[in-house]
Structure formats: structure tokens, C-alpha cells
Length: 373
Length: 108
Image 1 (cartoon, rainbow over the protein chains, first blue to last red):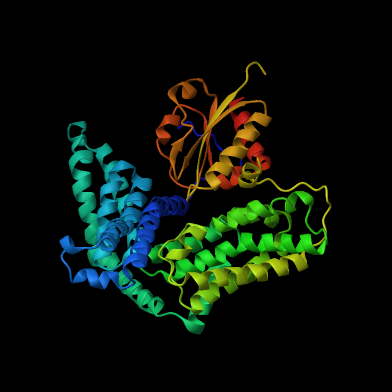
Image 2 (image 1 turned 30 degrees about the vertical axis):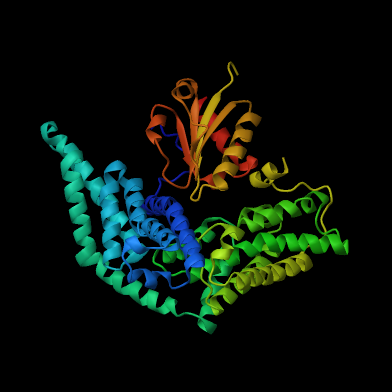
């Protein structure tokens, strides 16, 4: 690539390359986890919460429709850990990285190293494949072509998977089992702290890198069948746009004019975005008045997430806003906690805000501009 | 300036629902504000849209890849002066202009 050197730019560090690869893996996993999780939720709503146990006693020919839907959900959900590995491998080493990455992801499931194992394994797969690709350039051209067609798929997969099975996977599997056991029964005060941390973390940069890192952990745990953190994440995240809308509504009714006319005209679209779990609505407010917006959002997020953790709410879906609320373990509680957090955010934000120049322009926001035409 | 410059680009964020399209929008606006022609491909959750074609590649002057994840078919841009950055850097028209100016400076 005829790369344009950026002014004062440093070379992309190896850590940055690896991190981008991890994000790519997660990015490709999302549709699997959402599809599987929501189908599971539908099946449980149709056939009862213990559908999986009921299914174990039956032959597949005897399944009810709910059970078939549950099986479809399982089919897609069970590959979401391998998919992380596969696409991390692909992001690093291109096409040859895909097979070893997928294999190591499946291995990771087998040895109970879960999504963390797949992330580490995918990186190993990528680097082993890159190494073999480099090697292929050093050998005589006559044997060159056996590398991509034979040697890389076989040896890259073998080396990576053996490493995973006997070396790297062991501590990760041990660690993940510990985490799983700790989080499985997490509720009460411990649950509150954990949930509050997730909720507050989701409310810092509204869809930016910090929120992504938190979401990555919650989504990853979902891939391992721990559904609590996803509920905390969604509740903590969704309360931000709703809270900002609440502040605008309070402003409207008290006539304090702390928001400009243009800002208040976005309330309705803000509510729609809040329902769709699109936190980016908050960005212009955050940019314009960082601290007065950030602190209320984080407190509201901590409350929403903390309450979800305290009552051990579960969400099989990781994204989808109000459309996936019916699939949660207790939809009514979720809505209640969502509104509670938003109320805190909204009231605090309203109180902290200074009256603004009515003609001031809002900071740019593509999503908002599109919605407003 | 003799001829109107043509700048192509690709945007891709992690989830591919919001940031990808916000970045594409502001990048397009920034490029046009600086008197150039723009075409931005989005690689979001729905796959590739507004795809940069071979004809586009043949007549474009530069490319901007604003992506947080690995993009599809990056080799298309091999012969073209290309600037890579994060979607964050082109999220508002203001910051996007800075990136476009860098590109224009580099190819002038």
C-alpha cells in the first residue's frame, strides 16, 4: 500500500495490531451471540425456563417447536467462541489464519477456556500463521506453493491447538472456571459492586473505547453462558440517553432554559435512540460540557448496573435495546432499574447544567443529524 | 487547482451500526467542504455498502481508511496513496477536515 505517512505518527505498535485483531474477532462474533441468545430467549419463553433439561431426556425426533428453536439457538451460539478465534486469526494473518483460529476456538470450548481462551488462541494462531507465511518466502519457489495449500492449514492448526491444549489453555481454563463459578451465583452486595462497575464503565465515553472494553468483557462472558453481566451492561448503557432526555423534559417543564431550543427538539429522537440502546446520542452533550454530563451518567450507570447485579438479572442477548427486554429473566425489573438509573442521571444532569446561550450550535452528531433530516 | 480531486474511503467500526455511518457521513462532508469529490464505502453490520469500484479506484487521487477493525479487501488500495486512521478521528466534520487536509498535502 502506498501508505501516506502521518505527521508525527508513530508506527502502529504490535500491541495496537493485536488489539485491533481482538476487536475484529468480537465484531464478527456479535451476530452469532445475538442470534443465538435471542433464539434461546424465545424458546425459553415458549417452552419454559428448564427447556434444556427437558430436551436432554428426549430424542430429537420428539422435540416440540420450542425445543427445535432452542436447538437452532444452540447451533449458532455454540460457534460464537470459535468465531472469535477464527476472526482474530484472520485479522492478523489473513485467509490462512482462519482455519487455525477456528480450530483453537473449538479447542478452547472443549477445555473450558471459553472466550478468553479463544482470544489468546486466536492471537497465537495469527502469529504462528504469520511466521509460517514468512517461512514460505524463504524456501525454494518449487516448494513454495505447498505452504498455503498444505503446510499452513495442517501445521499452523496443529501447533496452535497443541499449545492451547497443553500449555496456554490450562491456566486459562482454570481461571475461567473460577470466574464462572464466582459469577454464576453472584448476587446481593457482591453483585451490586460488580454490576455497578460495569454500569459505570459503560457510561464514561458513550460508545467509545472504554465502553467497548467493558462491553467486550460482558459479551465475552455471554459467549460462555454467563448472562448476568450483559444485563448490567445494557441497563447501565441504556440509561444514559434516557437520562439526558429526562433532563431535557425537566428543563421543558420548569422553563429554566438550560438546554437550547435545538437541543430540546431532539428529545423524541433521543428517546427512540435510548430504546434502541444507541448511547451515541449523548456524545454531543458529553463533548460540550464533559464533567457535568459525565458524573451524572456514571452515577446513573452505576445504579442501573448495580441493581441488575444485586437481583442477578440475566440477559441472553447482548444488544437490541427494548426489543430484547422481553427475553430477559425479569423484564419488569430491568425496565424499573433502567428508569431508576436514568432518573438519577437526568435529575443530576439538569441540576448541574448551566443555562446556555440559546443560539449556540450543538456539536456535530451524524446519527442525530440523520434522524432530524 | 487544475482538476477536482477525487478521494475515496472506507469506514468500519466494531459493531457496525452507528459509528461506521457517522464517520462516513462526516468524512464525506469534510471532503466535499474542501472542494473535492468523495465516495465513502461503509463496512458495517450489513456488510459492504456503497462499494468502491474498479472505476473509482482508477480515477481516484487518494484513499482514507478509517477503521477500528480489519477491513475487507484492503489490497484494492495498494497502488493508491492511502491514509489509515481510526473512526474516532473522522467522527466530526471538524476533525475529519484535518485528516483530509493531511491527505491533500501529501498528494500535492
